Image 1 (cartoon, rainbow over the protein chains, first blue to last red):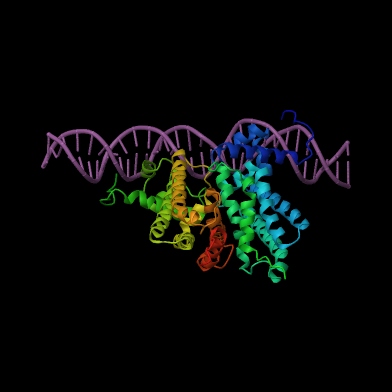
Image 2: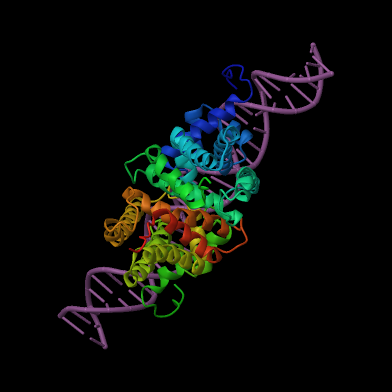
Length: 204
Length: 204
DNA sequence: TTTTAGTCTAGAATATTATTCTAGAATTGA
DNA sequence: TCAATTCTAGAATAATATTCTAGACTAAAA
């Protein structure tokens, strides 16, 4: 209708919608945030929003999937540069802690958002991400398990054992339930992770 | 208007509403479940539902708070009968696993439900429950920490370290992401918990 | 037993807000 | 330049959470 802002290189719009949505969600909760609100904050119209995202749930799903992808991707990169059993375990723990620390609102949103109402599409994307993450960890550790440096446990259990405590602490910290920052607990949690799955070989 | 069912001993109605709501939520998700649906399934009218619960979120909050209370209460009872450091750690882990196993739909609901949109009232109730749980654990362990049987760690970290892995595995299992039941992992997770916080004293 | 205050129920009316729809503007690629 | 496609706008619609009014039930008092 009126003059449209300027030449948008075709990906800025969806980004700004997601950014605005995340801000709203984090500030007032997903249910409480209206589409009108997101329009206001992002400058996009209802039409644009529904053009890029099929529904409000679609926005939620995109934020979730993007967040996990970003987080996993960072871990992958660091793990590629790591070597050794203990080093790998610590890298995984610290990478998660760093991501959460640098993306607090995003992390808070991810933890606070139920996966109950996701669309099939996003549910599937999530599953794939989880599987890929799992495979990555498995591939890294397998040799060390074979060498007896990492305890032989059911494959399903490594991720929960290594990261479960971090997730749990992060939830509380982000909710304001605990003062000490997650970052300051890095050693506690990576020590603990190694204590659980590690079997340091005594030399000789 | 028409003949009302029968003499209700005044607490059956809210219970049946919660039960119906949980069934609906578990089957089709919270957002997808309409109040009309809950009316149908519970036999209650809109009016009744809003008489007992101020809003849909109110139902969600009640289910959440009741579930956690039930779960914590069970742990408390078992812990009262337990003694010893290692025994305590294992009791806590196993009690959680048992509750989840016996209340799968409820647990799935709790995990899948974001705490983002709770009313102030329920948010507060939740906080109190968490605090109480935390205090209980702390009270039980303190003597053992003093005796050097349990590692001296930041107080905030015990619950995440002991239960984090169970929560993480439970989420996946309840979502169908993993075949082996949580119950079958009891030893893995209670062993791990003890490995992290325990410092078995060698005799002599 | 009758009265009365409080609690609970019913379902229609309302209000909010996610979603759809139509028309047109901007962009892309040939 | 000219389609074809993608994007934008905002009004119209539809779904559904919530409110409201009237009345039924219950328990205790008189």
